[in-house]
Image (cartoon, each protein chain N blue to C red):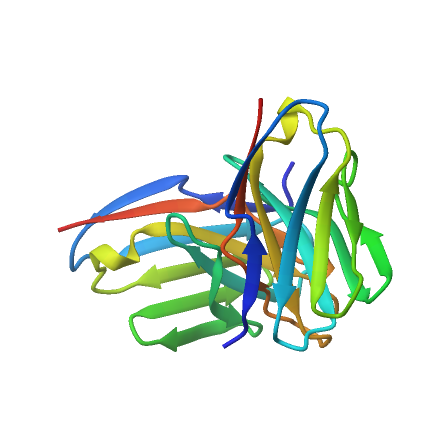
Length: 112
Length: 113
């Protein structure tokens, strides 16, 4: 079983709509979480990090972390076609990038 | 912004042949990584390095070697390429600190025939 599981595998939302992506981890040692975004033909790029319980908002993007339930989510408000990409959840227990574990990704399609 | 450059962008290799993928970073980062991306598996760590002339095994090192001749350069070597190694490979770098963000290159698409 993967330590970081994402849902759904794919998601389609209309332009201007809200996209919600979910991530659940099975390792209580994970303390740090990220969302990475990968556009087609490019490498992943860090979108947001969240290390404390609660919400973190950056523009149209809001991440929510609940360490007790090992759940982190990403909500994209007013989705744009340019948001269409593969989104990865990543988690780590501490120092050392080699400790980062990635989920298998959620493919988001935003239709005009 | 951090810069990680990979070469080549794509490569076709024959089964049993030797393949070398190269990565160069200008971020002055201590850590460098090689990941493999396959559909349904996300990103899996092959090898990493935290200092020149030293490499460490990641989660899926079998069939791969790595080389870090300098802080800026990190190579992934497939001595005997196999069909199962067809994938997209990403190099990344990060600073040494808690909760590091990884900076990825644009990837190399490798097809083994």
